[in-house]
Length: 391
Image (cartoon, rainbow, N blue to C red):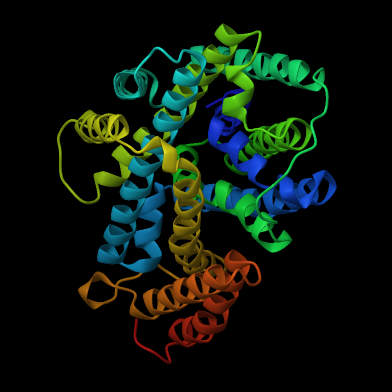
């Protein structure tokens, strides 16, 4: 894949309502502190994303095959199952938010049929343009950036409205929400990078593309919330450019959600054997479309925050084990039963630390869970590498 194609692929992945909406959730901190949390969190989260893509490139394996390299055959299968679940969930989230936005613009349209239609459009886009990204996707991403700029210009021209926020978000939680979004793309990075021709394209292009796109989207949502006291849905409902806004919603959903369906299809092939690689994409896409039509859209905000937390809780510790094995140059895991038991135990401990910190809203759960994995797993990995413990 060309450098500009990979760069635009990840810019397109970042241009979504979920990014704008999440940025708005940070507004209670004030613009300066929230923007600091956004930039710092994205440096950390997008750095992890790029590292995951680089490891898959070096190993020449997809994300879940690379996970199996460290976690064992069956450990990789468990990771693949978690990835399919989170990617199907992301597809539902994106379709639901798009359906909510479209029905806000056109209140006469019922939510369920709109969401179902959008889900089927995402599936069609994935089947046609899934891998690799085609030139049309590059054109759409550039147009989306222009359309978002138009909406930003309109919101900037509005009179400021004193915003009243029901609760004050902590800086640590704001930082975590900024880390969690790029971490949620970690498995997908490997699926798109392992076939790349050079290391720069497999690491720098995803980092630059996603960082730029996601920081801009978070910042856009933050700006809207701070200045107008409302969220993106309210902005587009009152916009003079309703049709432009509708185009942003529909095409950003297509260019982002199709990536999830493609990666879900790749991961599912570790779990089930199929001759046609499009069958898993078709099955997961149909499932997501139907679920989206019946999703309680009024609960979207709480679901999104909890969903991001759950993804970080699972994948940050799992990838902590993968990162350690990579830097220690540990050979492929050949443990009995196909399980790297020390690695999985360290990952589970990291998940427990994450859940504990997130529940108490204490510290930065991603970094603390990774620290737990490092403390627990590195001594064991050193012993295994030296022959002190059988692999």
